[in-house]
Amino acid sequence: MRPLLPFLCLFSVWTRGAGASDPYLPFMEYLDQNHLVCLKWGFDNLQGNITFKLTVNTTGWVGIGFSSDGGMTGADIVMGGVGPSGHYFTDYHATGEFMPVVDEQQSYTLLSLIESEGQTIMTFQRSIQTCDDNDYQISAQPIKMIYAYGLTDVISNHRARRGAKEVNLLNYEPRITLTNLNYLSITMDNITVPHNTYYHCKVMKFQNLDPKNPYHIYQFEPVIEHPDLVHHILLYRCPSFVKDPYDKPCYMGDIGDACFGVVAAWAVGGGVFELPENMGIPVGGADSNAFYRLEIHYNNLNNESGRTDSSGLRLHYTVQPRKYDVGILTTGVLPHSYLNYNIPPKAAQFHTYGVCNTTLFSQIVTHVPELQVFAVLLHTHLAGRKVRVGHYRNGEQIDFLAVNDKYNFELQQSVSLGNVKNIKQGDEIVVECTYDTSNRTNVTRMGLATTDEMCLAFLYYYPAIKIITCNSHPNTSMSEDATTSDQDTIAAQESFLKALPQIQYVSNDDYSYSTNPKGTVREMMETPTVTCHKTNAASRIYTSWIMNLAGLILSIAIM
Image (cartoon, rainbow, N blue to C red; front, side, top):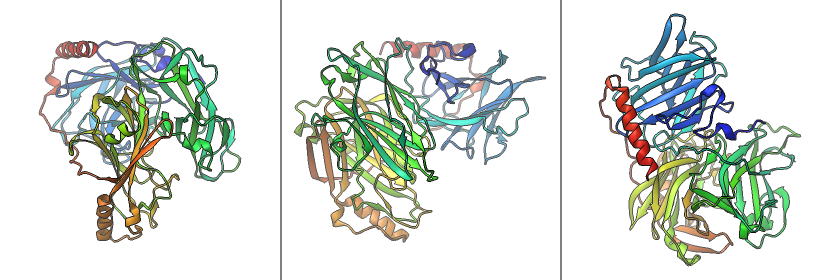
């Protein structure tokens, strides 16, 4: 497998120059795994214009779009290329899985379109907020970017030359130049994957760490041998009483079941995740003897016999200390299958809630600083449709830590929030998940299987403290099982479960814990909507955008 690191930073040089440094387009993502489709972008301000530069390894047509769920229907698309008679460029919208329709209002301005050394390079601009109903309104939330391209200038079926990736355009952390290629390889050892859902755990020490020197992990890279089998990967730090390695099925009553301090997380559809340049997850040093548990959830849908796998993670690290230690806090609904917390069938939408009250932190750690949340990974299973993470202070909601109203099970990605969220001692965090079980005839349980459900938000924050989990579940010993499909009864069941006292659990990295049996689910505000502002992108002067963006870059540099 060729090394990925030279391709994954903003200021590296890509094949034939597509990813070379550009001070006016500071953000960059490769939209495909083979690094054939490169998107760069920059913007002047959140109410102004955003400029894109799409580079694709083809001399045919190219297209890129904004989609609510990663599919074609409802997507806002631009396509262009350089043909025998010159360049072509058009704004479209898709009404289904077929040729998109030309927009009456052309909201995109072409700045340049060239072919060079076998690549098509298309640079264009639009207002961040347009007033065209057929345009996707860009917000500070993650967006599913879709792409497709052809080998000729005849726009037709793209076959397999297409894909999607979730990107946060307005809250993006630019990547830095990598100065070393040190990494820990944490993988399974050719394990046999049985039928259906299966969890495998490997408890181990990190090898060859100098006990005299601490290390900082700054990047997680998934190593996925069989994408059709691997559902998610979690690497946990173990409490000090775990002292022996093993390699076997998870959750069989072994001592390693107590390892729940998240060090790294990956889920289906995700990619490489890199921490900001002044942050890292600490390993080694005084903790060189710590054990870790690698957990992989396999989903052998086709029940194929004899499948083996050696997937895992590469943890890229530096021996140069970074300013902040990063922690990952697991919040949401306590994920245990023995809970009587069931989602009824035939429900168009059903909400579950997990509560984290940070007042419990001080019961098991001596000092609790203000926590700065900068990234999040949201997680449900197949029935999940929306995930929202509310932030409360003094009993009132003050913000959302994260919102994904178009949750896609196939596109689960750790996402930078861009704007750091400040969590003070005493604040509350509520994770709300919305499910659709319209096509199910049986109850969906909270549990580990892919056909069960989860409701989790992994919060990346600094400075790290020893708290590792803060979740809850309703006291369902006071409720009846949810088996009805009557819509009125479904709504009543949801309301009843929401009103039940929440049993809250907080634990630290050495398995000490605190509980509160009287937690409350507070009301969550409506998701903020985007306000449309009329602008004329075509009349904007390119040089003024350069000056504004240069000012933005300067302001970022001095923050």
